[in-house]
Image (cartoon, rainbow, N blue to C red):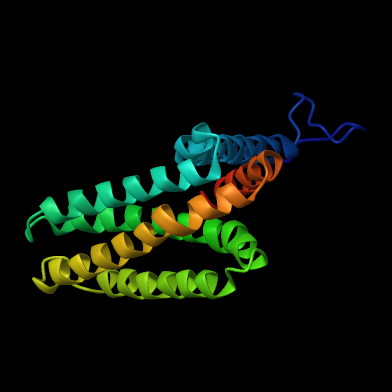
Length: 197
């Protein structure tokens, strides 16, 4: 039996055919809104330690320490904990990718402008090697004994890279810049990190 419609397109009981559609759209929009808020919260949590440092150099050093702490956890896992290894490796990849992009997009260009172009290119090249090792680890059986060997090579490469940044290049750059330039660099780095988090 067909329902008759009034002049406003509604059935006599007040129900319109679009009410089902509109509740579906509302549900979809609500889900999207919750997901967007959760994503912002995750981004803030990931970037908070760096932002709280209020200094680009200190923030990057904190990220270095956090990266090595995740590698420590990975090294402590046995080969039969492959699911846990995979989860920590995914976390490590995300941390390193975000960190590398902050340096490559914000810090290294400023190094290059200050006459340290060769050093900036070398550091950028280091990032490529690290990303290649992360790729290798990601495609390796997490229970393979070679996993720890590759992880050890990754740690060594990162520690040397971090030492060069922390002991030589970053302190010299911070010293060369004015207080205002350092604050600006910190803001730019934190914004880049927040976008990438």
